[in-house]
Image (cartoon, rainbow, N blue to C red; front, side, top):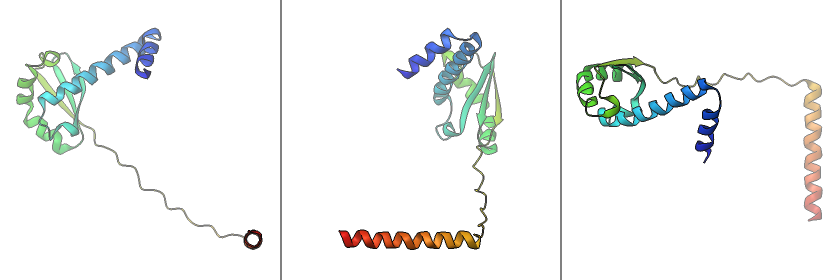
Length: 139
């Protein structure tokens, strides 16, 4: 339902948004067809970047995967001939876009409390302990 609503918004809106939506849908289909072309060990590490003319551009998440794809490029082209959406492919281009890991969290330096703040917190804790004791006695 939400997907239909989104596509309606794109269709009624800006023509540029419609083009983006169409290209996204096309890439989704091409990525599904990629499962018919690539070895299943390579599939989680590869996706279609674009298909321009007769050049299929693939994105690999590491240099190792990219090298293997380059080595298998003729086999990939032969397999593409059997798939309607990819039958015109005569060249494969591979780009490497490594997965970026989140940076480690920054070290937070502890700040010392001022003597006034320490005294205030100490009094607050004492009051809470007294309140807790009073509540226990009432129960």
